[in-house]
Image 1: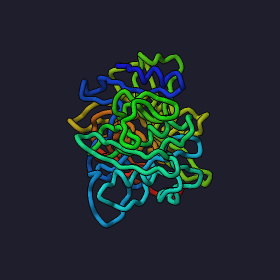
Image 2: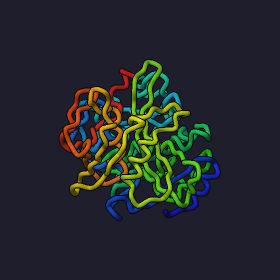
Image 3: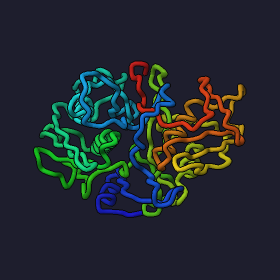
Image 4: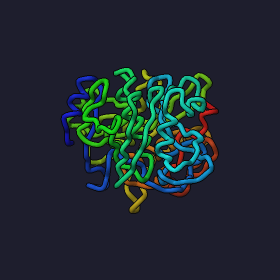
Length: 351
């Protein structure tokens, strides 16, 4: 696990930046924290999706469409929310503009959610060779130091949600930043999803001997609206990232932070393995099922989101005791491999 100077500086302020590499289930091809694979399959359009769109960030159309922005939820988590944005000549630029406080996107956020970028922030976005260069005005500096990490995560994950972007560089008034302007988090190299999101470290895990895995748990609003929250957890170093993902999903979230488990406490993973070039198969015991012989809908979607986030798998096949005939609590059938949906938390008005 490669470490650089800004990892050490961030650790001192309690904000751990992960710029790591790992072998994963599929050898050197696996990317423990990486942008979701591009694609348009929407087998789970019932409620969740990727951290972004898979659409070209420069597409031009006069229609509005769902795009994924990142906001701060009432618990302080950085959360993807898919809003109705106008498709312009720069959809990437518009996405960030909808993350500005008192900007056009704020009225669409669920109650208690807050925009990440300071009021008055304006920006441009230039995308070239998978690198998005975001140039902010001076208003971007007007944030509290404790929000710096969240702002970095929100910008990075929003931009890398587009298939045309893998890394992000930040400028202010045309000057490239070597460190963030308030808490001085170093910016030694362009940002990517390797920095993680909503970071947490297990007790007893050494930073330099760890593997980061990004897990999707659920949270609920005061109105009992449910939404997905990505959490990057540092676990003991492993070459089998897919197994680590499933182990951590079964362990569940840090409930002291308000997150909710997504799988039954008694559920067991019999095996998780690559079954084709693009498919991972997860075989559960029948303890996954409830009294009606149905699997938890939120849980299976979390499995698919988490595995496709951490590996190069484009689809996930769910089986129970080897059988693909799995029905969920919302009456969906998972008999075939399932792709990530396009939009995460796409109905904020229902939260």
